[in-house]
Image (cartoon, rainbow, N blue to C red):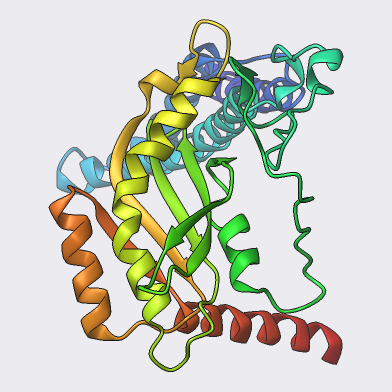
Length: 311
């Protein structure tokens, strides 16, 4: 057996051993690719010195045959290289995205501490330390259930699940010349990832259909309650979210000017325009979520649950 064949056989065996070691996890990094290149070079003496090329006279034909053999060797060993590279890449990706089992955890006793009132943070939500006691409503929070279509109050409580919600005391707004007061619910949304906060209001029905003047007049006055809600949260609650050394506090959250109004009574286009103008004058961007929005959510609920029942 001459040198050409011995070198070629050794190169092939060397390449197979490299692939086996790589799949067994014994060989990682660029070293495997370098050794694979050496194995490819060991095959060139036979590829270029075989009789099919050696007996061909010098010229374009011989050059073409040599190029073909080099290409065949290159393609074969490039396939090995791609296979090894994909294996290493998948291992790197897996190690980079490990689960959070090794991340620092809060003490279990701290996780069990609950704030009084409607807002109860879980272990995945921001921790809140009370500076002063808030006078939360004594009424128990209404539990939202997915067993029946959502109400407007359900949507007010569950929308924007990515943000922490701080529920404030219920308030009342005078909404008529007769002294009628419309009850409102208030909450502040804290988006720690986006470092922003915004405010939401829920207006109960004024029971004066079809004029709905009570809801309309109450909504006109809500712009004055926005700074009050922001100030109340800043005064009474200290909030922090994140890992040690990378905490985002309430002071880091900027108010976007966004205000949400959930209302059970229908507001006409003219009424909505007046409310938008009042909020814009105060520097706020108001958004309405009324009966039309509730109807869309109820339809979506039925589509989801009717399909499950059919199955």
